[in-house]
Image (cartoon, rainbow, N blue to C red; front, side, top):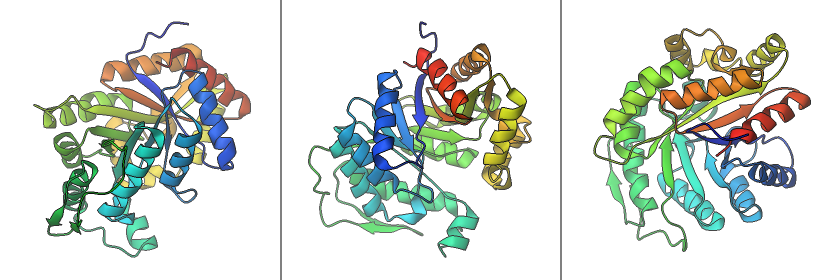
Length: 305
């Protein structure tokens, strides 16, 4: 089946199995034509360590974080970890970073969530030069970061950096400083009317931004059951202000409303709409029972670039 999509297709890794099983799964994804595999930093494996192992064991597939919260790591530590994965993987790594959420930052980590956009701007101003091998002496209003010399990590070119950006200020920040954005819980209409034009305008005069869109997807003959499974599994997201705002923009009430759910042709049509909206990459979060997961992977792999 020929690829008719002008969008690259990757997969969000299921991080529950043992590491060896994850490596085998990513190798299988690569063999089926998927271009990339992405890990989230949640409450299980450390995403950098996991991707370093995957990168060493599984060649010829791109790797990325979607995403690592900046509040949990100093810029120096983030740069060291990103460059280490870049070195181990032979330059196949994309660093996806973003702000976490107030309940996590304040409630679990005991840190401040005040002025989050200012914090991320200053964090990027410190981080990006480190990734490029520069000495940094950054003292901002909320972030201070210094290095004594370039980070000594050989064979590690600067990775591409994408920022989890949804609101206008964050998109302008991502477009002006980083290589693009990675979105979650953001529907196709919102990608077309808000995400792409805002970040593209901010990136004027620079390289066209990457727009990495990640959404739940399931090829199924029982759409109603699949939508309920998605809404049950992702019930936390509509309660978080940044994602609630994206759902509201879309006119959606629940995660399943922005997901790609349906038969083969329906999911393909959803991918075509995303490509038309300006997405450059789609990262599938495959949700469903075993049969649905297998069927979804088969349909996506037929069109993976």
